[in-house]
Amino acid sequence: MSTAVTEAPAAVTLSGVSKVHGHGRGAVHALDQVSLTAPPGEFTCLIGASGCGKSTLLSLVAGLDKPTSGQVTVGGRVALMFQEPGLFPWLSAAGNVEVALRARGIGRAERKRRAAELLDVVHLGGFGKKQPHELSGGMRQRVALARALAQEADVLLMDEPFGALDAMTRDFLHDELDRICAGRNLTVLFVTHNVREAVRLGDRVILLSSRPGRIIAEYPVPMQRPRRIDSAPVAELAGTITDRLREEVGRHGK
Image 1: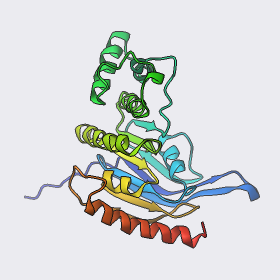
Image 2 (image 1 turned 60 degrees about the vertical axis):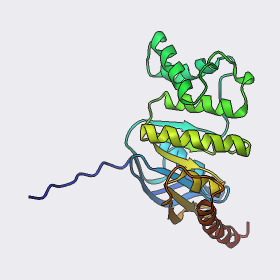
Image 3 (image 1 turned 90 degrees about the vertical axis):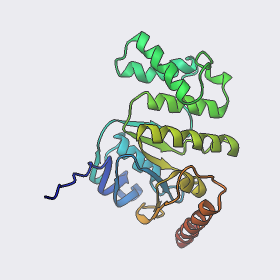
């Protein structure tokens, strides 16, 4: 007797999504007929030329904006992390994490306990009382990551979160993100301009065309984890994707 296997519903689904900003002659067509499915636990990286609609896509998934046409479906809670940490300068590191916990209605004593736990998760135990200006750029991003995790999100949206960091700090945070995602089964949509970073982190890399953004190629990343950004397999696949990206940018004369 056969047993039917029920697949888990997708964490994120975009069906024929288009987005136009403005009206008339000044309208900007950001996305055009984008269809994308991200299963639970997948790390999906989005790359493309500047202005191709990557950040717009994240805004639509986050519910910060609505598509002009098409449908966006998200299964679960969403957290968003940007390139800038966006910490409140008058709050301590722990206080910044507690902001997300307070928004969920968690009491003061429990907030303090969970904030300390989350700072431990991102290897900032003992730094809870530090103000943002007392922390390095990488440490501030780790506080921002702890704050995102405090939302108990099923889907984590990351818009170039490591773009402003030096190479060594970025590499360290890649390792941290790998570890955290593996332990929490997070679904991640990660925007980056760094093709090697996309291959280093992603289960799949999606290439968007120049504006309006359309999906023009998908690259599964079959390499086992952990990966090194300077490894030969990462460099080889990144080179293939970069060549395709250059073709697309050259096609538009940019």
